[in-house]
Image (cartoon, rainbow, N blue to C red):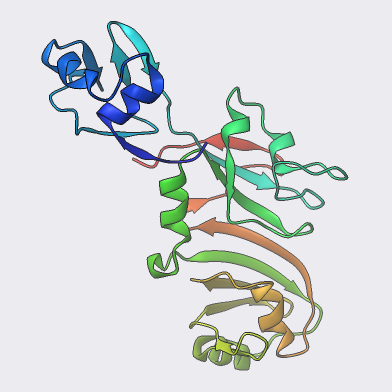
Length: 228
């Protein structure tokens, strides 16, 4: 479902037999209810989640949906795929066809995937200026050293895009495991950052996005949550 914002008169004309010009009289006659209250202006804003009634008949009553999923390895971050099972195939929800993915994960990467029908929310948390931390647990092929921490904090130059990554926080958990916190999501960024040290990423798991964490969810499980 795409997000939108309309004026009330335009919404009425698109969702009933009445024209834009009719709406002024409908408002005056108190025949339109918006979010439980009598409409007061033809210029009122109607979003995809505004509840609208006309003469007691519901014209729109969509509810925002927010889902967190623990993606297993070998599942595609897509809503449709002809060859592989997708994250949407793991969800049993009556409105799941309305959902889109917020921040995809690679085929073999596990962890937190967010899905919603709220386009405004997904755009907001995806904006670079939001600086929302994404935390990953990484398993490497070679031992880690303290040098990684400083280099990641300074940023790593990607010649193909001619950019330097924003400062990232790296916590070394063991010789071959680390926890990495990023505020951006360039193409294969985590693998490329460790590739600077010729250290192959063997396993990658997204733990959280902002304050939304996959902790407590088993692989393949999902649950709805609220953003309030």
